[in-house]
Length: 582
Picture 1: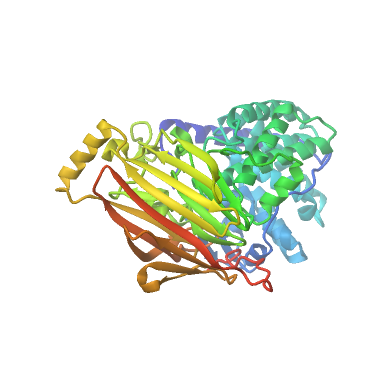
Picture 2: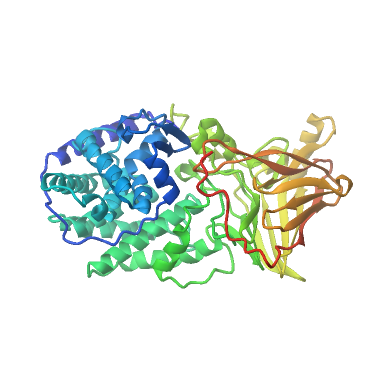
């Protein structure tokens, strides 16, 4: 995705460069006052790939053994951002041997030589904050064996970046980017000689953002679960670093941690991964459990919604439903038209999924991933429940926001005779077709079955008149709809029972069976699974129930039932999708 080309965006980037170069003129800091414990979690496999010269960032693989990262022509802005954010240092530190240390040292001091004077694309508040955190976390790893001149260059560059953050953090976008910048400021202020003055203003600003950006449900405006985890992780790092330095943590930061923790528990599937909604992925392996454990927050999952999501959990099965209006305005820049979509995971195996964010695979995949057909829910007449449109008059280069999205999304959670029931609806098709989509999901107490009902209904006279006009336009042939159930790539799906059911075989040995009430036509069709850390979308399948809405009310019933459980002798602990790059 290209950077915005509006006048304000160009001016902001120009001012970043000005302040970066001014910051580079200073010569403060000669060492650490204290150093927070390293808390970032990297991937051993990715660290080994980097050592072999296989550079996989933002969905692009560049094989360049013997070349530094900074000699590579970045294929897009996302790739470049990952380089300058230094997240790869976590992966090298996860290996932690002499070879990866030498590589980390080479790349870090090459960055100082090439970009340390305020040049290059890495001088934005969020990237600088992200970079400062990694440098401080892994300082012992990279400083080992370095001479005095190299160490002084390291500390000087860190301090210059801290000064830049002190001048430019206010220009970072609200939410995760600003929290990254402020966390970097606090880390630098606590750790570096002469930088103590940065701590108090950064803490005040972070406390204010916690009050404004983290709502009563423990959610953030983007409603992106993975982004919520990143915010939570940064706040726990700040709290721990302040505690280690003997300073009190602002109450607003502690309160935000306590609000977010129960929401993350709601958004966590039975396999430990996050639900994939609104541009978020499953989260780095181990990051969620580590963050929850280190936070000390003991809050239980709430009875109602968390960040607009509902969770049905029983036995070894979890279902997470998008049960609120999608984000609006600037917060919707990565949001999806996914209202009432759900994901189902059984034990350690995802079964029904959403396609996910295609941002790593280019603009077209990103756009496709945001549309309703890429989610496990209903689409009507080829329409998404929300449309994509240019923000603020269609300024060239500006990212697309969600437009004409559902606004009325009533939801009720209750007990069913043999389990738990979710009921919800949305008005995303009301203006265009006069119909409301209502969905009911019922999970059994033991998690072995999920029964669903999807209803398209014209609730009042105005809706009926709109529906009649649409029916006239198609000569009373009915409005086509499709119910989609996207399957994880590791689920083997086959039509069964003479085409009246679909058998779903999991690698754990479980067997699930999908059935419907025969009012719609069922098919198994191609689909894709879009996930970070891969070179291309993964081919998979989807179950599609298609039909036509002929009346003011059209009802479709379906069910997913576990026909065979995982054998007791098998401990299904591994997910094959992790750390795979081909």
